[in-house]
Amino acid sequence: METVIKLDRISKEYDGINILNNINLDIKKGSTVGIVGANGSGKSVLFKLICGFTSPDSGQVYIRNEKLGDKVDFPKNVGVFINEPGYISMYSGLDNLKFLAGINNKISNDKIIQTMERVGLNPNNKVKVSNYSLGMKQKLGIAQAIMEDQDILILDEPFNALDYKTYQDIKEIIKELQKEGRTILLTSHNFEDIEQLCDNIYVIDNGNLKIIDEESINIYKKR
Ligand SMILES: Nc1ncnc2c1ncn2[C@@H]1O[C@H](COP(=O)(O)OP(=O)(O)OP(=O)(O)O)[C@@H](O)[C@H]1O
Image 1: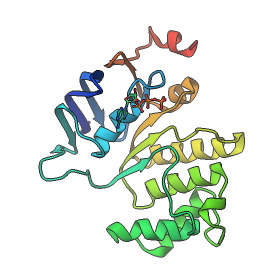
Image 2: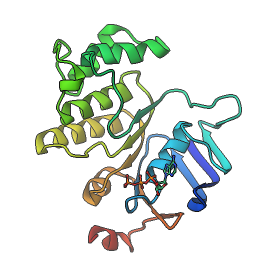
Image 3: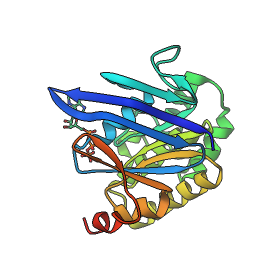
């Protein structure tokens, strides 16, 4: 299976502390990979390195065999969901997505509307995003990450602070995206979700990235 994300000996430190220490990672097309680790262990830093939002102190990130920082700083066709995504608060959800879609200008308004409906948002809802509930904002974030049919999805805590119904809805959407063959990188503080959704699970521990195998999985379930 083709490798779509490759981290080659990546190190990153902040304020003299090694957040990621010489890590390697190889993610195959169409797989779902979970990253777990304690608060502050470096999960978001890892995701930001893959999105090109920050650069490593050493090592290389390759997305679809293209080295970041060479010809491209930001990889193409990568959908990113980060916690508390920034929106234009006085715009409606639809207008926010239209604005964001205008950057690449590759999808129609119909596609945006369909994507909103897909994640359970009403495109005709004129409520400003500043008045959206947290769950609505999360759904809008997912819509933005998938609306251009991005084949790589970086989902940092997509289930955070959701009510049960919205949590289930977003989980179902992720399962559909898996069936569509998208490559997904996921974090969650709920190990059960990670276990249920992911083909491979890694933990960041003291700057090291280790795969969680069948033998060690019970240790993490208990945490
Ligand atoms: N821009 C930055 N400047 C300084 N320190 C940073 C920066 N970004 C991240 N860090 C530090 O890197 C460490 C890892 O942060 P990161 O956000 O990746 O943790 P995390 O594993 O995603 O945590 P959580 O589970 O709480 O979301 C933290 O100690 C954080 O303070």
